[in-house]
Image (cartoon, rainbow, N blue to C red; front, top):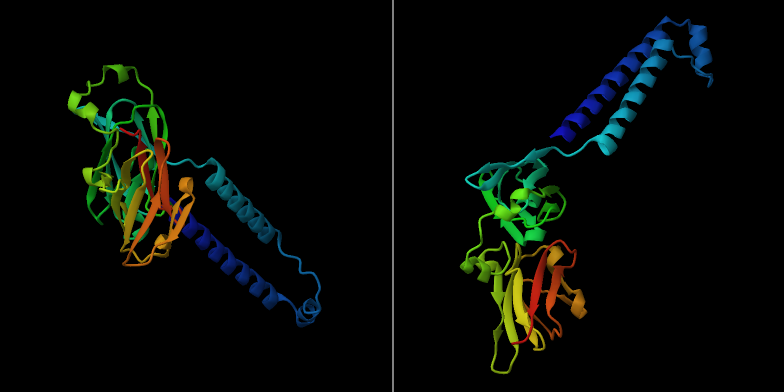
Length: 298
């Protein structure tokens, strides 16, 4: 919103200055004798009044100062989350970006971000927090909550589905981290992911020993995380329903795979991961991502 106001102000100032300049020139031409006007048309230098030169200088310096402030000195608005019932909570308006775009929270405590989407742009219909493995759709004119627990201090970005608009979660260290509510045994068993259950799946082993899983390509990849074991062949079946050109290509760099995904068809990719770890797969434009989590062989 601020950028729109600034651009509108610059345009209005430029228009006003243009009109004023035209009026000054017209008045000068009207007051000049015919002989003087004839001389001007012979490519002679026109001496402008001092007031016009001063106005030009003032406007120019003002625009330069505005650009310096906008690109170098302006900082994203920040807001510290407020704790309610042990949860750090803050509301974020999604309208031409994120407001506020910098959120301050404490490490070791649950965080809830409430996104209110006002902008109908398709670019902002999804919110992603890559460091916490979160991706959620944002229905228009509704509040969508995202929850996670940052364990370590640092800066963590959140962005739209097309990675064009971004914000930052600044996690600050706190002495209360050690006093946080202890994690139950049931919670410890769960993977350290802020993902819905349907966003992660374990590959199913066939009688032939191949680990198979199906990934739907629609608004990103579902599931976003596929869990397999090292040392055994893997086959991922990608069912593409999204016609966006971004999904024309599938890339799995760690396994040297780059395949075309035909619309409304299933395309299979096969590889054998030798070592445990996390291996990323992306669309051709690297805007949407998923992870193959390779665990040690049992």
